[in-house]
Length: 343
Image (cartoon, rainbow, N blue to C red; front, side, top):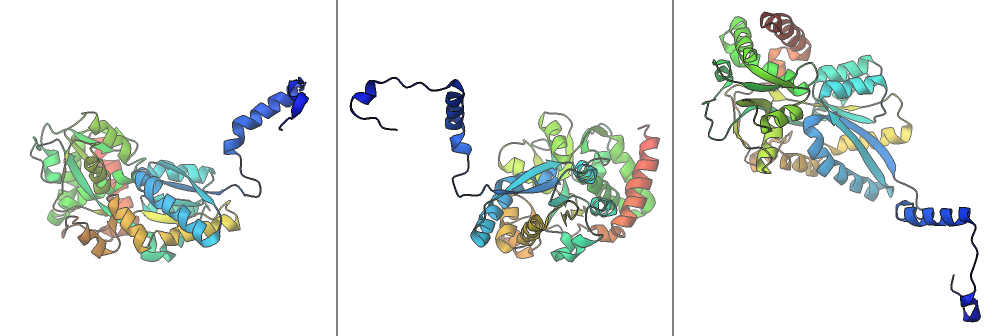
């Protein structure tokens, strides 16, 4: 308060408690909401690790702007990203979330079985809940000193493979299908033998695709099995020294978008549904392609000059996830291959 005339020389006494409160208010005022302005509403989004950068840096900030324009309300998306199995377990255990992007349909089914969402609700979304795709690829050292060209080369003696763990990583489960599927044209016995040969050479495992990439980046191993998107964006930005090798026959990974029902109030459910719809809009699909994903709109992939993969297959070619998980991931890999290798 301004003081005039002789009053300026007067020494005012302020109680210590009042002074402390004033100092605290002064320190905090930049973070306090303005009078009459409601604080932003938060929307909690969980996702598998490889989707973190695209969503945190591009997709969700764009959605916050769209939501503000459409509703006049400020919205802040709070995120958590980890291996798909880890994310699924956390949501089942009760962590708050309004929307999740899980790497595997079996993870979406686990959420439904736990009462987190309605069974099969993701299939009611466009493309049955698939907002983007990316193939499983191989990343080798610059110059490809081991001459890796396909999954069969991973079974050669002396090749050291860095691989995410299928028990926690959705990308790793997809990779098991790619490795098995690469040998399937020669029959189921040949497919399992190729899977066995690959896993004989797995020298390091990590809980997620991103963690496996970090191991490879730290000069461990000769080849990394991972998502194209994860490798592509890191190589483009100089964070990973390596080259992408596209196997002749690999799998298209198809993460699922899941809207959470349990513990979500009606207002947040509306926002989560709007976010889900936003993922299939053309502008959002362009953002996903800019971050290395394959759009569900083929013309956007052509415009981005992403390599065509005519022999890549979807999980439907293996009988769908129900059969693939039961007969390939659980029976072939976990119950036969790993015990034979002493793991």
